[in-house]
Structures are given as structure tokens and as C-alpha cells.
Length: 302
Ligand code: GLU
Image (cartoon, rainbow, N blue to C red; front, side):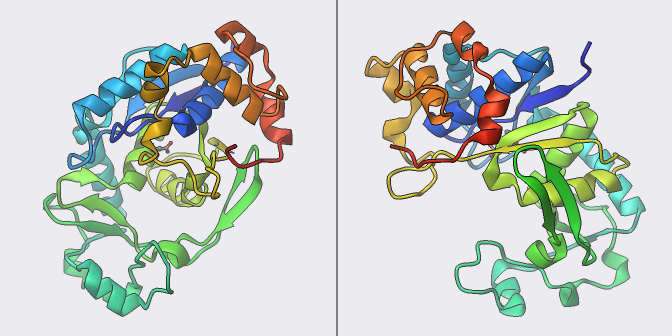
């Protein structure tokens, strides 16, 4: 019996599109073929962006595509006690501090390069030691990260080395809205849920070393395996985003597209078949998704 565990971790903030169908079908098929447990975790912490419609759309898409999971749905919005416990652990190690700095202040202090998406928090702005604690959850907190290279070995991409301090400086770890940052929530939950294999889009590849760092601080080991699957791109090379509403699965379904049809498209993207053809769940599971993912050279979305 395999004791391996993966998770599907959608953020219910918009309608699911073909890019999601691709990465979730890959994750699910990889797991089901290998006999891993599949957990479903709704990453619903961003109260500004999460909607009941998006959650319904997400669950509907899983059912429509035949993607199932084991056990109850886990909602991050219900796990506040665990995240606070994690913050207490981090504070106990003296690695978190309060940060009331504005983005504008950080931009000025960190002189970001043109086009940088991330605003780095420079260590010179760290407060004095009396603010290195976790006593007020209505204040942003940051994780003090010392410069060090951290390597994770991705099953599909090989070794990835990142110096999180160079990318993020001291990243946000807790938000003044009273929730953990994305990086803490994911690291904390993957640890607590016994996840052994993280399968997700490669836009999160660079975050893996930071998540491993947080995991270690929380007492976790390095045994987690990573599988970052390619993102599907549109004609202009941009990744499919939630704004591509015409590629939303619910829109395609309303126009008469079938689950077999979408699975066939995914199989074509994987290089399993030369042209899309309808594929049942059973035929999709017959595909050796793991070797297809390992050997594939990635074209753009047609
Ligand atoms: N919820 C994240 C997203 O939808 C994925 C998080 C993860 O897989 O680590 O982009």
C-alpha cells in the first residue's frame, strides 16, 4: 500500500478554465495511477476575491471532469487555529516581526528593477527586537529570511535553487486581515495534511524553496516531492488566466463541449494523441501521464 498523498488546491476566486482543467487532470491522473491518496483543499483565505459562485464552479468542474478526491473537503478559511499555532512556533524561534510598511515605502527602499512583480522587503527596514513577536494578528508580519541558497528537486524539472532572501527579502507571513500569507498557509497545510507530493502549475516553482524553508521552521522534513507541470499558454504566449472567460470550462460546456472532449484536448497537449479525440475517464487513466509529463516538449496553446 502506498502511503503517498497529494492535494488539489484550487483558489475559488474565478471561473475554472482550460489551464486549470489541464493541471488538475494531470495531478489527479498521476495520483490515481500510482495509488496515491488525493485530498481537496480549497484555498479560500482571500476574502476580497473568494466568491460562493467560484467555489461552486470549481466543485462543478471537478465533478464534470470526473476528478474525485478522498475524504472531506478542507477549507483554509476554517483552519485559523492551526495557522496561529504555526505563527506562535515561528515567533518562538524569533523569526517573525511586525511590519507596518506600505508598498510605496518598500518600493522606495528596495529600488525594484523595472517590471519586478515582487516588492522585496530589505532587511535594513527590520524593526527593533521589541517588534519581533506575534501578539497582534491585525498587523502584517514578515518572516526574517537570511540569505542562503535552498534547493528542491522537482520530479519534472530537476534541481531548482533559489535564494529566497534575494527574491522576496523578508516575505509577508501573516496579513493584517487576520490570515496567513499564501506561503505560510500552503507550507503549514501541506505539513499538517501529510502531503508527500505537491503537483501544481509551474508558476509556483520559485515558491517551492521558500515553502520548504517555512516547512523546516515548522518542524517538517525535506521528504516532500514536487511536480511542477507546465502552464498552458494562449496564442501570444501568455498563460491562460481567469480573465480568459471564453475558455472557462462552464462556457465550453454551455456551448456543447463534453468532458470527454476536454480530456481529449488535455491528452493532445500531453502529446498522447496527435489530434483531440473524445476520451472517457478510463481511457484518460490509461495514459502514462507521468512519462508524458517527463518527456514532453511544450507547445503553446493552439
Ligand atoms: N491555490 C493556489 C492556486 O490556485 C495553488 C497553491 C499550491 O498548489 O501550492 O494558484
